[in-house]
Length: 296
Image (cartoon, rainbow, N blue to C red):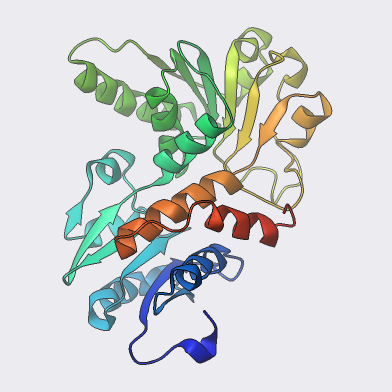
């Protein structure tokens, strides 16, 4: 939908972020609106942390259908919702705010988006080891996706081991409640030095980077890439036009590697349905994203 097509009847959805200018979500959502012939549009709003509460309150006031939240708003928005999904509570973060008759419902599609992308790319974790690098905002969704995919062991590697241990304990309690007793999965916390331990990385079927490490510093933490199994998948939850510093060494060794573009497309499709009550045309949002990234 073009700007000239927007009228007083057009319903809006949006993304809030700081920064947000780089977001490709408007391109994906607006392509779906145009294909379905809906009088709706998706915008990107630069919302600073100190204005988040005001921006959240504006959603029902302006009749906005729903809003995606990105860095740095996902955690702070938790207390601003009238209702939270079980998944948002478990992940302690909200990335989708849905306006339902003026009441705001918080949900989180991160784990579902990642799991779908891993399954679409034939990643098999049944009983195997997954390594998650980081214990910050993106890590919980990666851990949950791996648990749902049947990982037998999840190793959380973080600079601060105490933070990784708190995360490990939280998800150990979750799987214990889910299974009604002792968890079948082993969830453990390690320092970043574990990434150079050949035995640890050799066991991994999947290594996920859940940090922005490398995007600003130009390098990634030392990792024993050469010790990984030939079928190990390297997955970076961020996306870029070129291979990230985390993925580049894996690709050089012929390992499978993916960035978070597929996850973003899946999240977009899930959010579109939450906001609008209809599914987007199959594959359209993904094709739009990949074209914008120069991968079409």
